[in-house]
Length: 276
Image 1: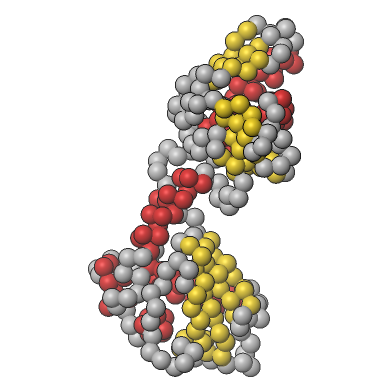
Image 2 (image 1 turned 90 degrees about the vertical axis):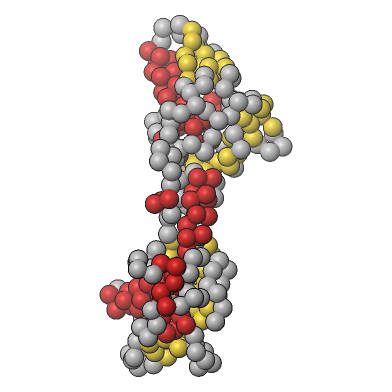
């Protein structure tokens, strides 16, 4: 039996009449015994948390076939190939007879550090960087000052945005600077990987995009702000390629911890639950 882990692709034969698994060549296999209930996970030195999750997901796949009226398993056909591919600790896909039917996503949110979604902590970026057209990138850093051209300036302090100046007396300009003050704070914390893009409110986004465009950034395509790759999608600023609400650096750290936990043998958890 090969060790189940990241990159594993394993195929089993499922008998829809008996509800049991077997290997393709009929050889013995601890996961097959574990799934069929003839081996306890804690009694194996090979099975690990990935196997525990795989067992649960295959059972769920079988249950969904009946509950959702799926036709993955037909009553007049006895045997099917079920293939499991583990992409990483948070993503596993399942195929029946070579056709992908289910992708299971797990967000390792239970391992996120407390206070990760923080818009009040000190900003991380202290090195200002002017707009670079070649990479469509720039830094907004502590100490930067932005002249709004209406009598107001925004200054990036250690952990907040300070408004200076007296404005022109226009109620519209006063409202704009209030939105920008809050929105820019959220944008920098987002770009510094300290909070979710959800902290950037929809009502502030148009003014933030205008500011970024005035600074040179082409927001119609992917751009990089404080080393975070960003896109504008459905009128919202988001982290490019991120499937999760959690900033990628925070999520990836939690995912690595989760993967380390999954890789532990089930035998090391004797006396405790083996389900991750």
